[in-house]
Amino acid sequence: MKLDAIPSITDLDVKGKRVLVRVDFNVPLDEHGAITDDTRIRAALPTLELLLERGATPILLSHLGRPKGEVVDKLRLDPVGTRLEELIGKPVRKLYESRGERVANELDQVDPGTIVLLENVRFHPGETKGDPELAADFAALGDAFVNDAFGTSHRDHASVCGPARFLPAAAGLLLQRELDAFARVLDRPDKPLVAILGGAKVSDKLTVIDHLLDRVQALIVGGGMAYTFLKEMGHTIGTSLVQDDQLASVEASMRKAEELGVELHLPLDHVIADAFSATANTQVTDGPDIPDGWMGLDIGPKTIRRFCGAVAGARTVVWNGPMGVFEMEPFQAGTKAVAEAVAACPGYTVVGGGDSVAAAERFGVTDRIDHISTGGGASLELLEGRELPGIVALAKR
Ligand code: AMP
Image (tube, rainbow, N blue to C red; front, side, top):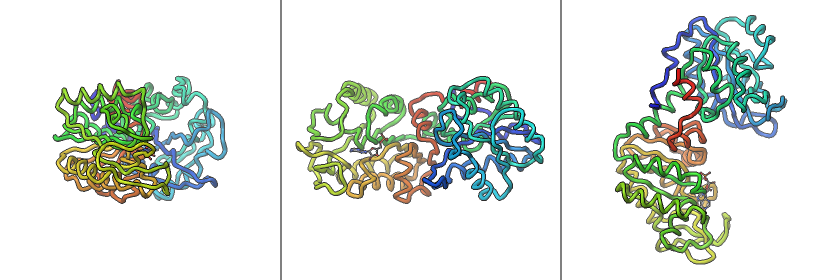
């Protein structure tokens, strides 16, 4: 399946129609239930504005948090509706259910062109189980379906995949932007394509490594996951993070990289600490070996130069995972330098995955990156080469 070859909202006949839109309004809330970051609501605005311009009545489906199939008052979508109203500058009609006759009757009372927000779909136990009856009930409320919930498209849930079985369906503008970005990296990259992987666990990234090795000219590995590689190469790693049960897998990855002629960049030096703490004693190593009793918590200056040099020469870059424990000030330099190198790269740049997006925000480079993905889990699955159920549901029509 070609990532960018699925039906587009721009080809859907929506005039005068009720269009069910699966959005991802799963925003973070503080302890008082106030929204702390409305990025996900803002991300849906272009699709909603397009639908309104074209004379549709958008009926929004979303989840919020993990109510586990029960009605949880704290997870009602009312604050989301209020924020959406402020952002779009138009009334939003919030309903207290997401299926059934009462909802259908209320929809009959709504003026055409009004945005309707249904209640949290995860109040129904069938949502996360992909229940076909629930999907049919959602579908009965609309004339067409748009999936714009990229961040949830790796889930085979009733409101994500189900309505596409019953209604004309297409990808919304946000979903399309995400798919275009990953297609530019995975299907038709300008070369050289350089991938930067980091983060804690190598086991989470093995499939990504395998899929990317077939595509990239260079693979940069930093963060906690690099120490399993270094150990396999025979270096000492002290008390650094390591997954001994993955040594054979990383050996296979290194062999594959060599066979394919992919440049594999691993840390050449480290910032080490005597404890996992922002106030630990720290040192910079001369080379890749780490003495007993010390752990690597960031890449060192030689590594920064090597990694940033590889990024500077790229025409396409994809970055997923921090280079060190960037949440602690003494171990942020590596991730910051890589974030700045990605931002400065004249090629096409994509950042995917929760922690690298947080790092890009923290180091103030988001404006200079071509695409910042809105879905951590979904973007990782695309990088693994997996087909996302929410996208397959649109494609197989
Ligand atoms: P992940 O969720 O696998 O992408 O990992 C992200 C986390 O990895 C971040 O919270 C980082 O603090 C952590 N991390 C990065 N490098 C290291 C390291 N060298 N040792 C321990 N944790 C690390």
